[in-house]
Length: 262
Image 1: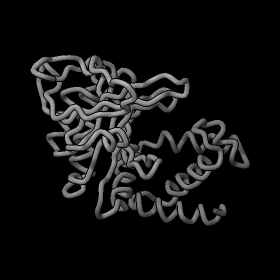
Image 2: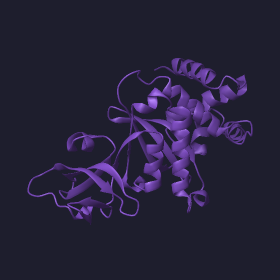
Image 3: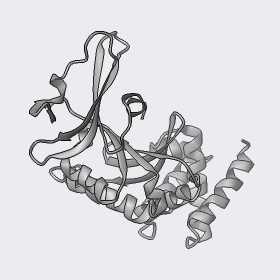
Image 4: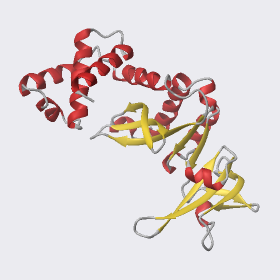
């Protein structure tokens, strides 16, 4: 893509995404996003060096980042609405939720899985102090915004959420159930399930021989406040040749293979 074509497409995208912003703001967005796509780093000094005059670009970038009229979360929601408008009208929509970091601020990100790539859909940034002791509450509020404002109506019925074992807590699962959203999550090995009328940790259930995956069935999980889900086990070798075990839980009656694939 040529520089001219990229600038034109960015200008059109930003005008559609943020119609209330004036020309100078959109031009700053366009210029700095172009720089970001070229230098591929969020370092302000490196971004400023992309432009012919470093000092002027550095001051311009500082003014733009500290402009009180720019609403980062409003822009994140506008971006999410633009992505939602392009989702297919039929078929399954896979959404991955995970914590990540860009330098220091923790980010909670929901991404649409397209093939083997994850396209960011919506994100929220928090300070370390905000996250400390409040992680579960932040995750619940994030799910409320995601499925209460962005992925609504018939879209919500086609969503399958995937997330790592850090999200496998009762409050998070209850919130997904509240919105009627299907999911496939990893379980920690210490989570207890009811098998043959006895509670045992899912990590204590062995996969024998060369078995790679198996469906344990529709079991009661989380002994402190039992909920019934479909539970499966899967394992694969790491690059170092060691076995890695993946206990999985889902609201959908999936077999072990599609659960592991998701």
